[in-house]
Length: 187
Image (cartoon, rainbow, N blue to C red):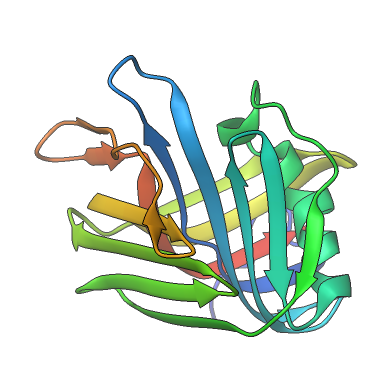
């Protein structure tokens, strides 16, 4: 019989995947942030959503606007990647979000007039913590993460400027763009 996970008294609040990206200009300034959600189950339902920050505007797109608003408020606003960005109340749009992802090739997502592509998987490894701060306190998070070499965002067919930052070592590469799978959040 498997051993129980540390902090097993925490209950699962979301299971799915949340790939993300930050693009940077040549000076190292963030030009865009995207959080792509594929929620298999959560305490607020299941579905797909895209949260995009670009040029000081936050857009949230999903067929389930209640789920998407919760993802943006409860999770995304607390992520370190968005700290320091001018984060205003989002424009929430009801529209189809289509996501195709695999850990060998990358991701393609379309939400309203937003198109996101991610590719060049550099690595696949496990990540887990029992100390992830969200707005209402400490959470547990476990997932498989796959940093990628490249990512693009376009809005209405126009490319958003910026590039992925790749760092780390050959044994443990890092990137400002990544895929995730088997993502479980517990509170």
